[in-house]
Picture 1 (cartoon, rainbow, N blue to C red):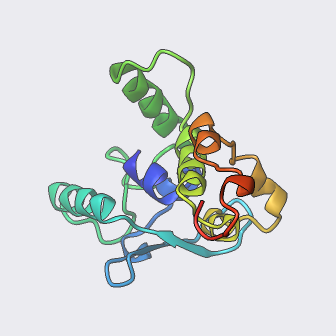
Picture 2: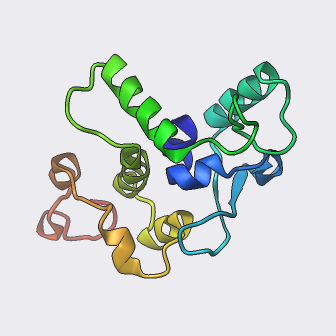
Length: 159
């Protein structure tokens, strides 16, 4: 779940991650199994790297598939990950319907709200068409309340 949110990944991308896709040097994740079949890189947060490192040691240091199935040793089933996500949301006290895709949506929305340029968000999500990224970006009331009219700042500069 942390990897989906902190890097904006789809469930299908997370289950196909390999150990070598994680770059501790560049703090990036190489995403290979994408919806659009175009490889990309996305960001790797330090907190997520710490969690992944702890997981890696606890799970016997997997060298190939990062999140192998405990039963088959192959890729995790996407439906199983989605089911785990729903159970985790329920345990966290989230009563409304949420899906694992909410992590990707929140990643994009939070980056946008913190001032990240939409072109960078588009690249991190692996979208070719900017309209695909627009779906993720909703202007929150908090963002609107922070905007000042240029009329109140006639000299320009920071508002």
